[in-house]
Image (cartoon, rainbow, N blue to C red; front, side, top):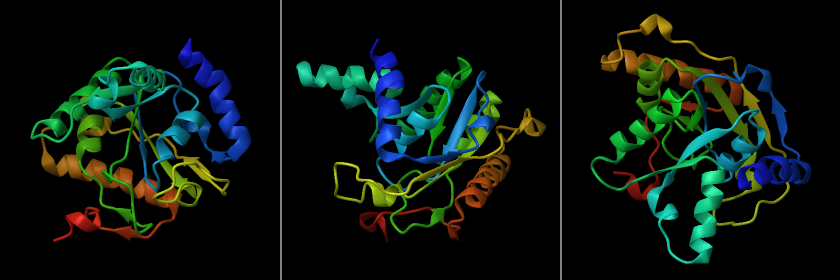
Length: 223
């Protein structure tokens, strides 16, 4: 019921208020496993992608969001589940593997899973080198990958703000990428890197951002 309320009421209301410009939804396969691979400009990107994609899309969410006690915490957990968030533990040595395994379960079930290959929001507006988890997922599940470019959300929800404000926002879906030519080669780091780089190039063409061939680091992570 909550899922239907979000899809049929909340999502159209958000589109009416913020009026995102959306292109290429016809490129999203409506059935079968698909990876939505997007650039990441602001915290609101996740909700935006879910609201404009023509099928339900799962994202990873911190496990602690689902385990809180009290009415408010339970309501938050129910809301996130309705948005197809998948709980996963973070902040430990096994977190990366747990995240990939959770994503793989979604794709093995024939559903859509969204990922930000950069790993974090871009604070400088540029598109940074992608982590190879997206390549590993595409190879292991044989899911097609739809590249997505989001622009304008950094103005819609600037860092430090909690309520989105009207701004020109655009979402572009690209044509699905098929990596079946690499079947049986998912154990190769070089192949995972090649697949990831192809995905990032497709996002780059859609977003027209400046590309930086290094992983993005937040200021407190810089050497």
